[in-house]
Image (cartoon, rainbow, N blue to C red; front, side, top):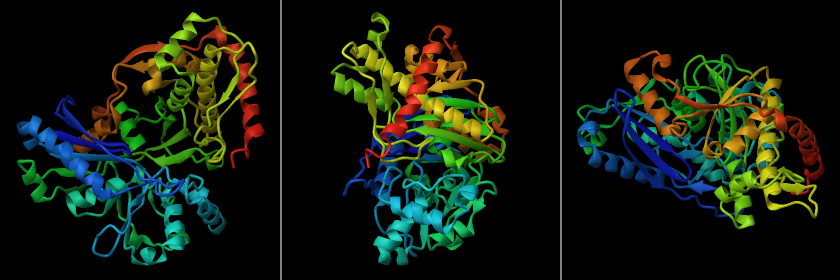
Length: 484
């Protein structure tokens, strides 16, 4: 038996899986973020801990015999957060989360002080990353910075509470801006820029490695036969990739969740930080990955549904019932944009509206705008030498055949819908737990879900979409700077 636990921003989710990778039980507990100032986002680490205890207590109550037989625990979690510990291991302040934007000035200062940062870390400095957060604390909370003995990411802090060990794995460490991603080791130069050293960092392991053993008192709490091994685990996207079987070079997927992700697994480090491509280590040894990210994918459709006063299903149904009219252009920059612009200040826009523009036309513009943003991601990955010929498609947006067809046509590639494309980070974490215990070949464990349908590009709409892609790309330069 294996446990997978995923620490998100809005909830903690846990699953219990058996030796045949069947999920026997699931449980989740909600979390809230605090925003004490505009642009700030924080959580108390103790809230994660209590939520996890509640979820695992629920699984133990539902499946006591299976829980007692657990041999491994895998962790997945929100990336980039900064948990500061003093010399006694006590938390010094609330965790500054991935979506906190206070450290804009510190990003510029880090890149000025370390001109080789992008080549080493594989990423541009962004406020969401961990290093700028510590630079902010150093400037604005110097007493706390001076007392900081260790900096941990969220799931590494949970591991610390579970095992007493200060350990992190490669995929999550890649999002700190302190890792030499190509060498899979901490960068002394990157750490020094923020006034830190290796002494402040946890020990690094691979995601499929054993990384501590559950404390006896916790094993007794859940009546486990023996204290399970805790695996290295993975950052949330890498854990999702393990759950989807995207663990061989060339495997790719498009995620149409709240945000949008174009993921490609690679066999080596291929940065393209100048176009805001994320180049991270994978959770498995000898593998890396690239991600293009658009910050508002399904969130754009959700926003438009609220404005239009219709639910999303109604808006999508209207596309089939109404003839295509004069489709405007939509920039899906409701929360800024990541790839390729790395612009947190830009905001969304509709353009080229007319008296004849109807609600279905605006709905189509939203779907197309997100697809165009993913085409920007695809081209940015190509700029780093990664060519993608086909991809799986997951996330809530993948349930819309109309949207998936638009996406396939804009990306000019087949997209495969999956029988179980919502496995999530907890399932990938459970797989990593199994690998840490058994030492099996990841290829034998990390199998992909069954593909249920392949959506091909639609030649009938390709020419019109190419023309609107050109107009879409003219939109960003016209509105950049207006949201600052």
